[in-house]
Each structure stands twice: as structure tokens, then as C-alpha cells.
Length: 126
Image (cartoon, rainbow, N blue to C red; front, side, top):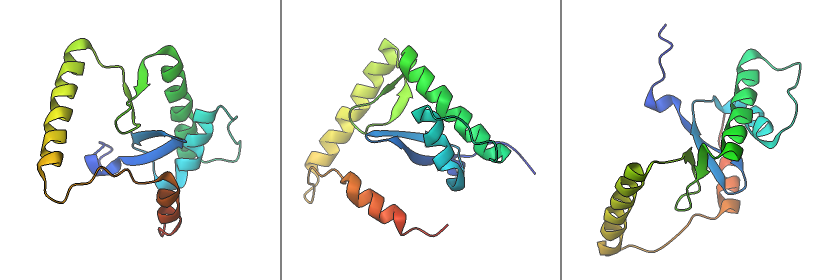
């Protein structure tokens, strides 16, 4: 079986309130990822997968504190700190997307509320 990561292996995970990350962590290990990001100690009864998720969360927090990663204000995602050239490309792309969004006849500036997202995720089956 191939161990290569595919795009569908990545999931959007809420690390903390208003901080999201796109990570290759199974859904049963999301709590361990959040625990590592929050700075809690590892649980000795966790499986290797959950311990790896906890360690990834800890590394993400350390990278955020060091300044290697930042929370993008547009979508609250934790991303690597962009270089000047990357920032220009990102801004150009975001501007194009915003213009397309404004031109659409059914567009509304709408952010999905955090409380509603939590309600919807609580109904997902595992």
C-alpha cells in the first residue's frame, strides 16, 4: 500500500477558535492535534497516529510563535509565512476571486458562523 499523501487525505481542522489548518490528520485524531496546538501534554494511552497528530499540533504552535507560520486574515487559515513574491501572487489571486464574487448576481458577503459550523460537524457520522 502506498504511503504517499494525496489531496483527499488532507482535511480542514479547527485548531483553536479562529485558527484553521489544512492537515493530513484522520478525523479520529483531530482532538490530539488540537491538544498539541494548545500545549497540553500527550496522553500515554494514545496510539501512534494520535501521538503523531499531537506532535504535529505542537510543531504548528511552535512555528506560529517563531513567525514561520501566520494566520491568513481572509479565511483564518494557518499558512507558512509568504515571501514578498508569494504575497503579491496571493493578493492578485484573491483580488481576481473577489471580483468574480462581486460580479455574480447571487453573491452576498457571507461568512459561515463558527457556531453553525460546530453544529454541522457534530452531526457528521464517523
